[in-house]
Length: 154
Image 1 (cartoon, helix red, strand yellow):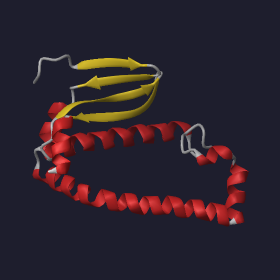
Image 2 (tube, rainbow, N blue to C red; image 1 turned 90 degrees about the vertical axis):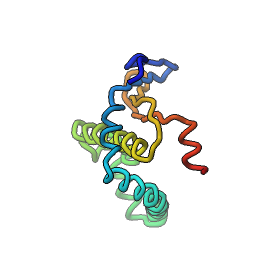
Image 3 (tube, rainbow, N blue to C red; image 1 turned 30 degrees about the vertical axis):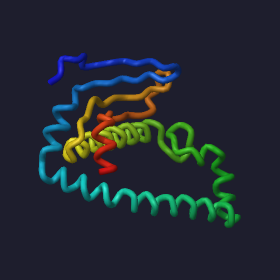
Image 4 (tube, rainbow, N blue to C red; image 1 turned 120 degrees about the vertical axis):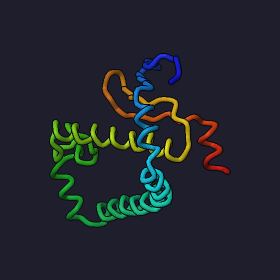
């Protein structure tokens, strides 16, 4: 393991970035399994197709909302917060369970990015959390850019 600091805070107002190298061993270990490499290759092929389907569904829902008066009436009854899918803003989402679900989904998603990167031979520099002021808004896995660019273009 590298002798660099294991944790790093970076503050660029209003964003606070917390980087750590603590999970790199886990990414290497799980990424070395044959099943993770196979799943990563399948995901690289399937994810663009799923994204196109999701984009179609979003535009279709928007069209139905604009063209169907009954659908618009339901949204007006709930209020404008129903458009924003955040617990505490959207009245249809429970606050505590909603945030627990979002945090778990983001953590699992980013761990999958780290494992997929290592299984495909890309170097992972760090992983971390992103805060808006002190509110957690995201997570990331930092892949070495040089390998990432070569991986996708050659």
